Amino acid sequence: MTDNPLVSVIIAVKNGERFLAAAIESVLAQDYHPYEIMVVDGHSTDRTAQIAHSFSPVRYIEQQGRGIPAAYNTGIGAAQGELIAFLSHDDYWTPDKLRLQVEYLIAHPEIQYTVARLKFFLEPGQPPPVGFRPELLQGDHVGRVMETLVVRKSLFNELGLFRIDLSTAEDVEWFARANDQGIKMAVIPQVLLHKRVHNSNSSMTVENNRNLLKALRQSVHRKQKNLTANPAGSKDS
Image 1 (spheres, rainbow, N blue to C red):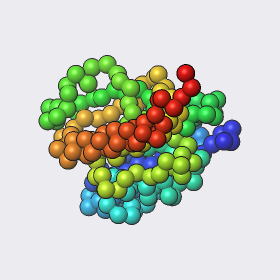
Image 2 (tube, rainbow, N blue to C red):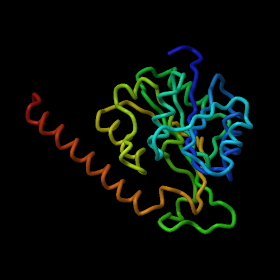
Image 3 (tube, helix red, strand yellow):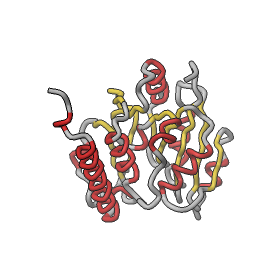
């Protein structure tokens, strides 16, 4: 890795005119450079495209296929950076987010990706969505989610891209795949992401719960397969 690697920031969005500008501004406020911002638009019908084009540093890309995983994969394919980060159009980063994670990856070449802590916040005037645990609004939490992820682009060659057959929970499946293959990662102990909770969150749906269960079942299957191939009894005592 170079001493000052380019970070490709992928913002996947569909009909995100309410919050997109704030997300982009949180990237522009980063105290790390260089980075590129790619807004990958999933066929929006609102003012998403106009908002993205209003920021001169932004590369606006129409996604290939449909769904969030396809948007991520489109962005990865277009990314020019050695490192890749992701941000949802309705969340925002702290200004030191990229710097802290990039510095860690430079100092620890064996680490393939980092995540960080996050805080949830409720969109003013809205109750918590059905399925959201209100206690998550208290304090901060380790966020193994796309919006905290900074990853070496080369890892996608080893581990593969996001599953386009999962319309949600694609991040859970990818993190599980990385864990099952023993990929080395680290958690940055600071809060680097503020995650908005509102009535349009895709992670609060019944379909998301089905995909979560599917991803977890596949992880269990991989672990069982690994145990069969490498039984504990084969190790020297």
